[in-house]
Length: 279
Image (cartoon, rainbow, N blue to C red):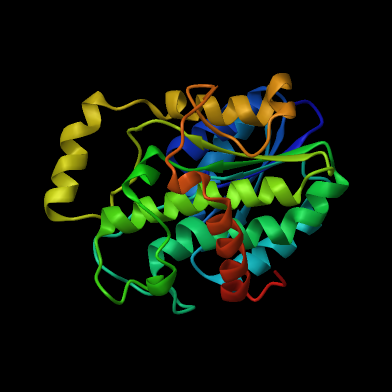
């Protein structure tokens, strides 16, 4: 990764921070996109302390104006972008709307991937060969389909179901993105990092918080969770793969819903409308 620039979201803790540290050790210049200044600065300092290069861009990825500002900063900071890792994500127990009026889980976990990637896509193409790695989850199996008729969850809300749908969206977005990038030497793949002991779910209360706490001793470490993310971002063999979904460094099976290319095309069009982009 010597001479390469990697942009990674959600890099202040957990999988993102572990992946950023490892990619830095491999020689990459890291640009961390984080919401929390203190945690983001600590992650960047840890990379520098280990002898690496790191810069910090602050953004709340549930807010489209913040994403647009961050993208402009990233383009100014990085004359080339060799790898984009969309990693930031969250789960919310109660239905909440973000500043743009979208349901918060869908906005944070999917629309941020879609908008940031598209805003940086020109630079990635200029830097080709380049890679996009989208962190999804086996939780996509909970979703039978994207509920296009109720993206704001006005007809009822279940936190785990909405999370699963957002992870299904990550995979469908990746498939359609890979199709659109045919012939550009920019690849796009999605990954299930495993069930990892991170700060994920820390904003939860009640039973969910207790379940997360009880499961922690049995979960993967952030470093173990980051392994396949780093592998897809850096390994020579991964340069030839696109439009696939990986777990434990191997291509993994998808549900029927996650292979629905018509739904992937529809999701792209709907997401473009929700983010003000040309489809």
